[in-house]
Image (cartoon, rainbow over all chains, first blue to last red; front, side, top):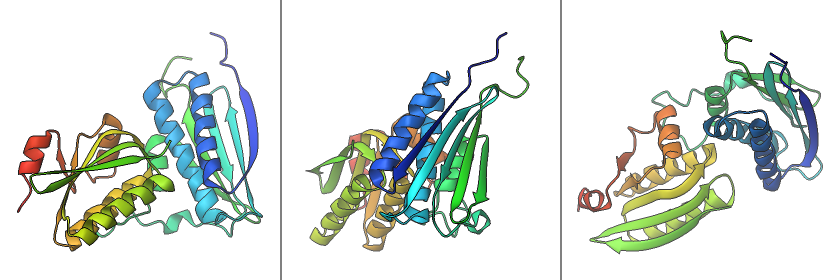
Amino acid sequence: MPNPPTARTSLTLASTLATVDRVEQEAEAFATHFGFDEDEVSNIAMAVREATVNAVVHGNGYSGSKEIVVVFEATETDLLFRVADQGSGFDPTAIPDPLSPENILRGSGRGVFLMRAFMDGVDFRQLSPGTELTLTKHRIAAGADA
Amino acid sequence: MSIKVSTRQVDGVTILDLSGRITLGEGSVTLRDAIRELLAKGDKNILLNLGDVSYIDSSGIGELVSAFTSVKNAGGELKLLNLTKKVHDLLQITKLYTVFDVKDDETSAVGSFTR
């Protein structure tokens, strides 16, 4: 069986809500191109949207002088979506559990939870300055014949 | 891309028919403003018809939760009607499905409010 095609695309974008919508649409097209079904595409696009919201809103604070860098990459085994901001950093261990009774009625704080629900990997890396978030989705299900 | 809201009254219940996307920005703000206006007028029995809501993100989920608590704190009730599969699944994942009173029939939903 031939190896699936690989690809890499990169975007540098302003810290705006229009960027959030753009990145979501790009992620949707990328996942569709690599053969994910409609439900999976929707979930991947939502996870990437949430990552971009974090970068634009919490990382860069909508700053006109800060950009976000988005890299989509298809390897033989995974789709990788990297979203980097230029903010002051982010501690993923400090996120309250949105499912706990004391947090269930909070009006925010579910973005990273949804990313983890929909993707196979959610990894944070501190930059100087900023944060890079990498979302991973396996192209080949674990245990499937190659 | 964003949300549209139309309002109607049925037997003392205010039904908001929502269509489009409830997402960060305009969609969330539109919903927040609509709820705020209803509460300011004293309309506290609110049924959100989400049948034509195609998409909702974490900000939109947060807005639904905030609407729920705002109405409850004002002494009213907020219920959800006609969830799409996508919204239903999101509320299940976030364990909010049992927090909200979710209905799938408008007549019985209207009749379920305490008056």
